[in-house]
Image (cartoon, rainbow, N blue to C red; front, side):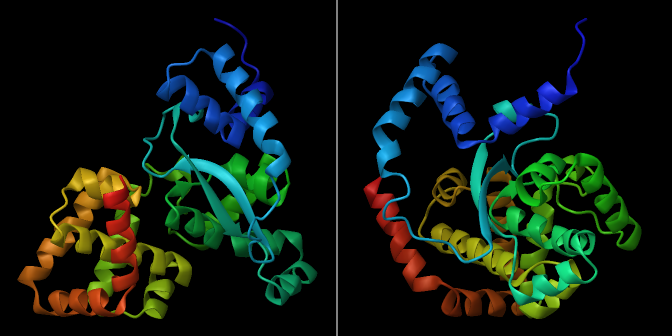
Length: 281
């Protein structure tokens, strides 16, 4: 049995969650390239596209940061390098509000105030952060510092954060998203859902938007696999969403709320966009 090298293993995990690592995985797993061939293709892509990078891009909001994270639908225990990845965008710094946090109580208070929402932002985009993501991609501190922050949060709030390391503790991650939809169907407002589940308004809007699109696509006759493919969500989540849609037929309040969501949600525009995807594919 060989000697483990934790630092080297950590670097390999971080590399697997970079854009280069994501492309290598696509080439080796999806196209059956050897590691040597994958590296050669990666170099060729860089040579062709590097001159165009940074030109004509649409800048994000101030304070936003992009990173590659593991898909929330990947099971716990699976090696990071073999997991599906998602490129997500997180709003790390919100402006004057966070300037005040950094001034008083300071960087530690800022991290502890922002950690829950950042984890929810990632989950709303279908990804789960790790301690390494928080330490080396977002806050640029050591793992011990992040571990202390997470321990402090656990001591002050018994609701687990949606991190990849706690996926088993919170049950299936999809239950977190399903609970948001259930509360909306019960007539709860976005503000009430945010207070109850410690979600950001953006996360709640994202979950409800996916649910509405799921209901629309089922009405158009698509099956679970097609809906999951088009919405880029796990099959398990789509199945749970469709169970809620069918449950609406048994409850008048849920049925009325679903109809309202279909009419007032992102209905028309997104429906046309998805139809375009279907015909285009």
